[in-house]
Amino acid sequence: MRPGLMKRGACLLTLLLALPQLAPVHAATVAGMTLASPARTYPAQVGVRKRAAGFYYVNARGMTLYALNQRVAFTRSGGSDPYCVGPCTRTWTELAAPADAQPVGDWSVIAGLTGPQWAYRKNPVFTFAADKAPGQALGDAHEDLWTVIVHVPPAPSLTAPPAVSATLVKSAYVLTDADGHALFVPLGKAPCEPACADWTPLLAGLAVRDLGDWTVERGGPRARWRYRGKAVFVSPMDDPAVVPDGGQALRP
Image (cartoon, rainbow, N blue to C red; front, side, top):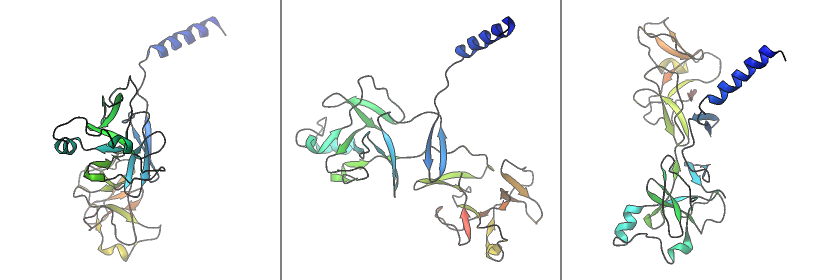
């Protein structure tokens, strides 16, 4: 390599080494979507699984994690702390934390019976002995004290009209209008008439402009939004999980 190129290469390497390290980006897959979040929001030895009711946390073996309602436990025990002692420890096992563990997201470290223990939103975290395989959650609502810890996927970043937002429905996000009604487009590529004749279009303001995949149709009496070339409609249902027959809910 020529001396000039070697010198420039060395300068570039020095500059790169001097740059600050960026926070890692993690992704969660939600019903076919990949939602990026700036950093992990739960401990490294904790994972996330999906069930019909949504996402929940598990330990490294895939066993369901439960939070002990500290407020209720404190009242029942007459103020004794900790609550789960004696026979309770044969049924419920603390989720141990490493000695050098640091708080992350809603997770913090507290003093357990045998050492550092993870807590979720200040409630101690356990596994349940009756769960014999991953996916089981037999301890949910046990004695009205222990609850499966639900994981809420991070909200996606949207490029959309101001009135459009992402609403979490069970385990996936759907796009809704300002009133929380689902947004949808007609199924298939054929014209949607007469089915869509009675549907309510997502109206656009007079001064708005196209925005990413969203374009403004101005051919009728009122400007309306289109998404990737398809007309966008607003579901009349209060439940954001429901759209009319012949429609397909919009997802981020």
